[in-house]
Length: 383
Image (cartoon, rainbow, N blue to C red; front, top):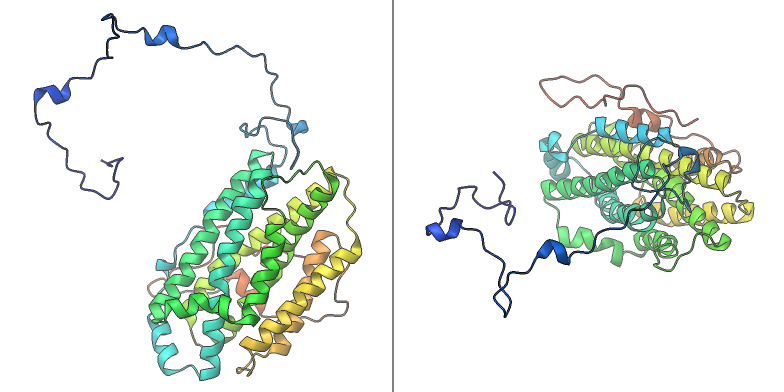
């Protein structure tokens, strides 16, 4: 049985020192020796006549219905995201990392080690930032509980991803203090984090008022950035250098960990894009296309700087040119899903195999490794 004061303590039942320990305490008497009537001193709660919740009255933000009442749903698709996410349960301990230790120490070139360590360094910080965005800046502003419930699951998944990176770093035997501080001391990594922090800080405020049209538009832009770019492009594209190693039979354990994460991030980005479009529709928001173009161009510039650092020397089968070309292609896909114009017309799919990594549709030897195809079955379709 759990010890509620200390869940990790021994569960052995304590023996009372004396019979008096089993006797419940009596209320203390007042100066006149009378025991106060506790029930009589409590004010009765007023009876309030409240109308039932009408699902049609729910809104994503600025809703006036009871946020504690889940059903009837206005957004059944949000509940489906939650149900599917719970089918996708895993932990980093499910994947065998033994071969990665050997690969890193005996097979990777110096250039490949540079790519591996810096990708992991960026990701460790990014998922914490994503967790703070959803958990602290976004979820509290949702006024339909079916949206909040999926986002609560998303917060858990971001924490799980952070554990996964830490598990990989610790298993390989990397210097954790050095790896975890790179986002602060390497300008090319830090500039991506700072760009995301500016978007987060603009909506992570106690005085934000989403009934104000300017504030609401800024919130939509920030959510579009995190759903469409941060998770939809930077994460989706950001795993590809590790997948390039996996395609050559290297760091397969880490890559498999990232495949699990990628499936979660596909859902995160898809959900964020769906919510943004719903807010735009409900609130009749018209976003300046110039602002959208600037947002994507700023993100592409940051990715240029980042990829020029992590891929300053190309590795076999992967280069910074491949990375940026693929970013532009994925950015066009996300913009289209958001209902915006393509920011990089003519961008080509230079890494056609990347979508295959997200799908995780591959044969497994049951006795050698965990089956990684999620229970949800077929691949999610972005187009």
